[in-house]
Length: 423
Image (tube, rainbow, N blue to C red; front, side, top):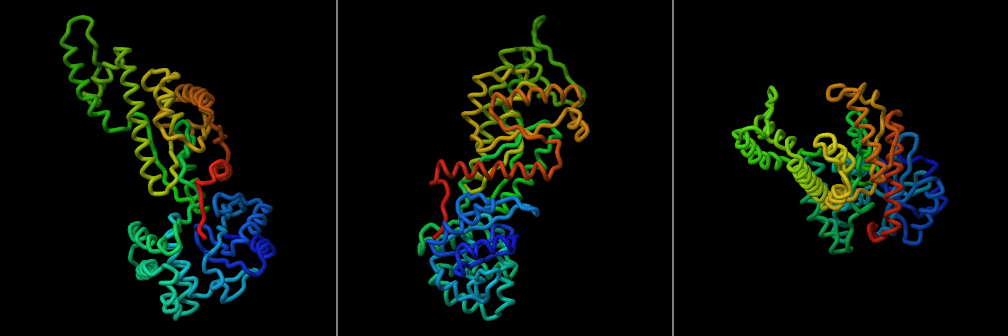
C-alpha cells in the first residue's frame, strides 16, 4: 500500500494532473502522467528513498515493499475525466478503471488475474453502466480482446497466458510494444548448508519482487539430481559386475543394506578408480549445469526472473564432499561457463550448531563444520555476497530484497536497453 505522504509528495511534484490507478493491486499501483511529468514524479520518489528499476519505483516500508509504477499514457487527457480526487491525485472514472484493468491484465506479466478482476468489480460497483461505456472505447484503446478476457475473468473463468498474448498483440498493433516490463529477467542465487534458510528466503524474495512487479519463479537444484545420470550409471554397473569376476586386484563392490544394486556398483567403481571418479564428477558437472541452464532459459523466455535455491557455490561444495573431487580452476571455469551467471549470488551463512538445531536429520556437527568451512572458501573464490543467516527471517528478507533491487537498478544503468516502459 502506498502511504498518503508519498501521494502528497507526488501531488506536489506533478500538480493535479496525475492519475492514480490500482491502489489495491498486489503488484505496483500506477501513476499515469504526461510525458514531461515522468521525471518530476521520479525525482520526488527518489527523495523519499525509492529506487527505480524501469518505470517501477520501490522501497522497503514498515509493512513491506512499497512499489509504484510511473508512466506516460497515450489517453492521458481522457483519463483526466475524473470520478474524484484522492490525496490530490485523480482517480479514474469507473469506465476508465475497466479499460486500465483490461490493459494491465494483458500487458503486465506480473499481475494476477484475480487482482485485476477485483479492481474491475470495484469499478462496476461504483457504476453498473461502466461496462457498456468501456466497450464503446475498447476498440480505440486496442483493448477489444482484453475486455473480452476480463469479462471471462469476472464470470469466474480462467485467463491463460495464451489468452493474454493474443490480446496483447491487438494492443501492440495499435500502440507498439506495450509490455510493462520492470526489468529484464534475471538470475538470482541463494546458497548455504541445509538449514541455512534458503527455501524460506527464496519464497520471501519471490513474493517481495512480485509486489514490485517482477514475475519470479523459484527453482530447486542439486548436484547429481539429473535423471540422465541413472542411464549412464547402468552401463557402469554392468562393467563393475564384469570386473567382479576378475581375480585379485579387481574393483570391489560393497552392497549397503537397502541400497540400489546398480548405484552401489557404480559408486564402487568410481571410488575404486581415481580416473573414473574424476571423469564421473565432470559428467555430473556438465549434466547439472545443463539442467540448470534449461530450467533458467524456460523461465527467462516467459519473462520471469529465476531464484535458484542452491546454485554454483553449492555445486562446488557438493562435488568436493560427495565425489572427493577438488573443484579446481578447470571445473569452476566449466561451471561458470555452462551455468547462467547470476545477477546476485548470496551465501546464507549460519553456524554449524545453528544448522544442526534447524535440521538434524542429515548431517552431524562434524559434517556441518566441514561443509561450513567449504562454503566459506567457495564463496570467497567465487566472489559471492555473504549474508548473516542467523538473524530474524524478516530482517534477512529485507536485506535480500534491498540487495537484489539495487543490483537490478545498477544493471539497468549499465544496460539501459534491458528495461522499457510503455507510453
